[in-house]
Image (cartoon, rainbow, N blue to C red; front, side, top):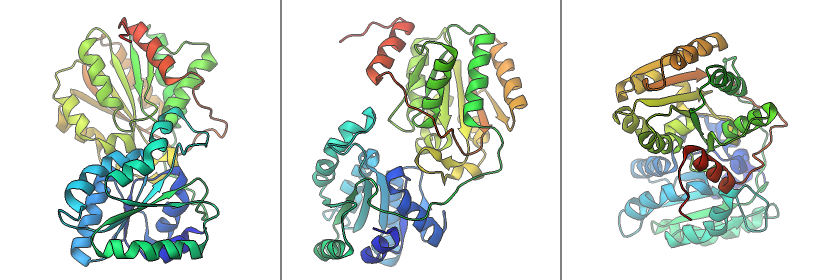
Length: 383
C-alpha cells in the first residue's frame, strides 16, 4: 500500500515519532509533505517524548495525532500511554504506527526476536487496540479497520497498526550533509591509535546500529579478536551508561564509548550522570552525522546543536570537536598520551551520512560477545 493512501485513509494531519527502517516509506512521505521538523511533523529524541508531543497537539487542537515508532520503542510509550493518555486519566486519543521487527516466522537479528514475539501482547496489555498491516492489506480493508477504530478514538482510547515488512511503499528520500569523514574511517582511526599507543587495557562500548557492525568488521579485517569490544546491539541510547557502570568498577582501564547522535539524544540525561560521576577513565566519542542513519537517514536535532557545549555543562572535564581526520587524530593522540586515567572526555566527530553497501553483521552471538568481554575484564560469569 502506498504510504500516501495509508495516511489519507487514517485521516491524521499531525505526526511525531522516532524513525524505523520498516516505516521508512511512511516517514519519507510525511517528510516530503510536511517537512522533517515543523508544525505538522517532528522527529523526536525518543518515543515517550513523541507521545507527549502528540498529547500536546491534541490538547491544543482536538485533532487525533499519529505517533510512529519501531516496536523496540514500545517500552518507552507505556508510561505516557498509561499515566497520561489512558481513558482513566486524560483520555487522549492517539494512533500508533509500529514497525514490526522480529515478527514470528521472519528472520531478524537477536535483539528484535523477543520484542517481536511480544509486540502485539505488549500493546494490548497497555489498553491499545491493535490491527496488523501487511503487504496484502487493501485500501478497503484499511477502511474497514478504521471504521472499527474511530469509535474507540472518539472515546479517548489509543489504537495501533502493527506494520509488517514492506507493507508500505513510497519514493525514497536521499539524505545527506556537508561532512566529509565517514563513520567507518573514524572507527579505523580510533582502533589504529589504540594499537599504536599500546592501549592494551582499553575497552570499547559501542552503540546499536552500523557503528557496532563496522567495528566488528574492522577487527575481522585486521585479524583481531573482539573481546575488548562490547557491542550494544539493542537498547538504543544506553551504551554510554553501560560504559559508566563498567568504568566505575574498572578504574584502571580507559573506557571508550562509541555513540551515535540519535542515540546520545535519546537518553541525553546519561551525559549529566556521566559528567557528575567523578569517573576519570571515560572517553565519550559521539559520531555526529545529524541522522538516524541505521534506519534510513532521517535527520536528528544533533545537526543543529552544540553537543560539546552540552557535555561541558554536564561536567565533562575536556571536550573536542573534530571536523576532519587530522583533528580527530590529534585529539586521540593527546588523550592517549596523557595517561590511562585522564578524566571524562567528550569528542564530537562530525561524519557524513552513508555506509558500505556490503556492510555485514556480527557473526558471533550477543552471548558470545558478552562472555569474551567479561573474560577480558576478569569478571566471573555467575550463570
